[in-house]
Image 1 (cartoon, rainbow, N blue to C red):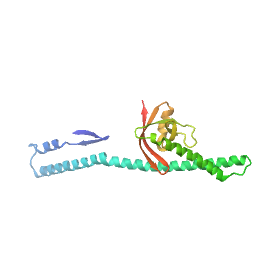
Image 2: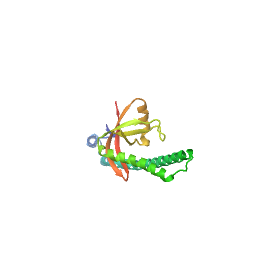
Image 3: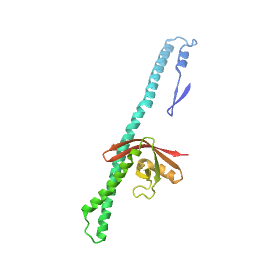
Length: 210
């Protein structure tokens, strides 16, 4: 018997050479029953090799495709979540400006408020556009914790040349943030970037530095 470790899964099987040896043993009586068993054993060996080969191809080939599809789906959800958070931040800013005008006993100028908010966001988008050429595969981004972030206490901001360009997705920031709070150092390396309308989507890998 042999044990083979394959992608973390241990497969136990009888080697073909051993099967052949068993089939060729002269000590076995050539009865009809033995011949039937030998035939079934040979068929089992063929079926096993077929299943083993198909499993190997699935793990090596299809798992890569499935992982890519999963990450693409996750990225879409993260983008949608970011868009909703941005809209929530816009509405909150608008409410604060309206309340500030009321506190000054002034009639809120909704058009001026909307213009001020639009300018603030446009300045941010312009800043991102200016730094985009500096974002390329293998570029190392700086990770900074934001424990006082109003939207997420586990927030980790990503900076490129001292400009904040985004955050680590909320679906995967809790473990990293706790380790960072414990003194561990992380780096983020860009894999790809992609433009979606006014949004810049960045795929990156995160590594913990020993």
